[in-house]
View (tube, rainbow, N blue to C red):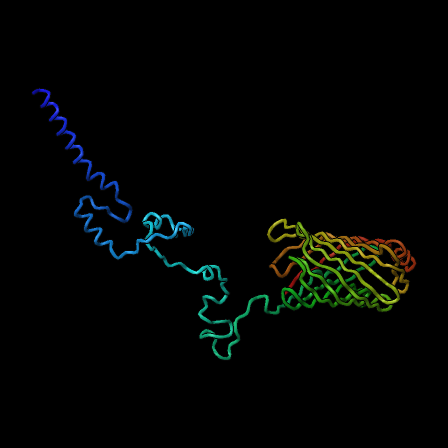
Length: 334
């Protein structure tokens, strides 16, 4: 009898364990987004509700379509038609235009362009002008007298194309001794660099000369202002001019400016006192004070020398081959 009671006790514990496991098992069978019934009656009701749904499975040979996303894959059941709307690929990749968000308005149409008012334009669509008087100075020399020198550059146009005027010369005793004037078309070829093409005219100190000019002008690395221009004249004449300068800011207003210029010619021109090869060179050092960014007085010293046959022509005319002068002048632009 003791054995019978022991067996009955174990059977009761097993029945209680099975009864407790049935709800947990039904809960574990739940799928995300769908609840599986835990009782036969609920299963019958679910079976009735599922009638009419398309539960047909696709043929095994047909490849399965890619699921729109991880969440959709966990909610889909095999055989159920789970069609989802998707944005066409062409609409996702179509490029947008600059006026896509303007509501149809442009620079020339719309309520913000009153009649008779000029439409707005970008900076590179406008024409601007500037005049730079780099040097307007008086030179004082112990041996060769005193003279006035000018060096002017002016331009008018846009960022990529502009008209450029360059003028440089010396006057002494009320007379123009030597002058060079260039009229050029400048075209931007790179950041900080312009190509230049035009004509040059020389006058004073002999017969006039005309040249075809071509070269480049710009800002070299380490902030050097550079000009390199070649010239072709009549009767087989040719010339080359190189110029470089640098502005060293000692303070925000005090600027030290070294400058170098070289001139070379392809053949002798005795009428103007010019020999072939390296003809002359000028090196100067000027210290200026910026009263404003547009006006600066300065003082400095300048050495100039003539070489080869050019120096011989100068000596034959009673002039020195090289001179050192003290200069004072103004630098301004507008």
